[in-house]
Image (cartoon, rainbow over all chains, first blue to last red; front, side):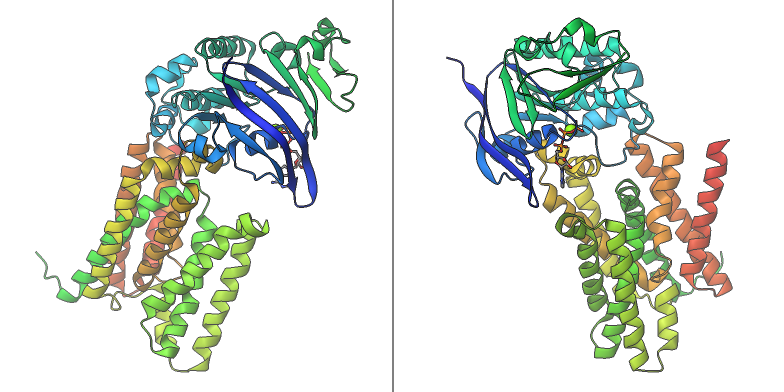
Length: 241
Length: 263
Ligand SMILES: Nc1ncnc2c1ncn2[C@@H]1O[C@H](COP(=O)(O)OP(=O)(O)OP(=O)(O)O)[C@@H](O)[C@H]1O
Ligand SMILES: [Mg+2]
């Protein structure tokens, strides 16, 4: 039996009186790669923040390798790539990675950003910033990796190399949870998929989430709307051609 | 070599110490977008200055208390009350400053003191002030050096910093407190109105030219020291308040640097 990397049990989160997550439960085994999909405002980012202990649940609990989230974070078990960052960063990409404590050259090379190592982070494009942040996160060698839409704005080539990095990490036994809107792509990579819209609408085999739909139609069309599971009303995936 | 009167040695030394420390913290002000907060903190201290005069307690103590109270109200309203930092700052600093005006009006005859606290005064600074500035400066720079990683990661993104093992709340509070105290220490020399020139200009200028962290910090300090020293010398020669001359030299450096860097 493989170890449980992440256990989420009856998790509910409220903001004020507004329920954001309701009774979410799932279990991720060590070395698994999960994709989390769902509509805007469906609570995906909130789920990651609750797993990390940044937002306190109103009900339920989270365990990371058997630890309370804060303990797991303090022990450096978890890596988190946020959807966007708050501050202004006028210093270089290399400074960024080295501040975190990693080898700037090594990890920027890994994400294909060696050439931009001396560019101020602020002057990088959205996709390039994501890659630098990813390098910083990887330099901490986390065992559980939470990624919030890591390839918004990352081009196809970068996306390919991004997935090959994830594949390598997975082979090393790293557990990965990735929020994405790119359902057509992630189903080819992940072991399990979770569809979230306040409640957990579907978990399991990624193909299962797409059964009734035609994946091919996701590509090449201008704008397609898909409901990828019969019980998952409102859980649309948009893809621009 | 011209004769240097001994009474200006202390103010010049104090100015140098303040310039170095505030220039280093100026990077944090720029990145964390604390420019308005730093204006708010110094103005709020004015309420404390007035209270100190009225009650006959050391002005530095009451000014620090007011400034710290204001800084923590401004810095935490966002997380507690969901009120944005700039809105909180706008409200709090006007209230604290107004309090100072009311307190000063209760007792008349302080006009020259009021003026010197608003725009700074070289004569207000003696060896005691130098000692306080040096001690605080050592603490503040020591904190920056010892907790460099924690501080910069927190500036980039508090949530990401937390996940990277940074004690975010403690780091933020210490940084806010040390910054506030440094602003208060600068008030006697520079005055409450104009101290923000020193908290904003140095790093802004450095960022025009450099992107390596080390270089940004070095140029920041150079700019801050240049601005303050030129301001002090001008003030000494012309008898204008040092706050005004320093803010003008800092402004000149800022616009000069802007022109050169855009060419
Ligand atoms: N700090 C907050 N205060 C109040 N409401 C919040 C807060 N953060 C999130 N919410 C609400 O929680 C809901 C879920 O937000 P969340 O960011 O988790 O969605 P998401 O699935 O990540 O969306 P997206 O695809 O746009 O990233 C939204 O309706 C949002 O308005
Ligand atoms: Mg989100």
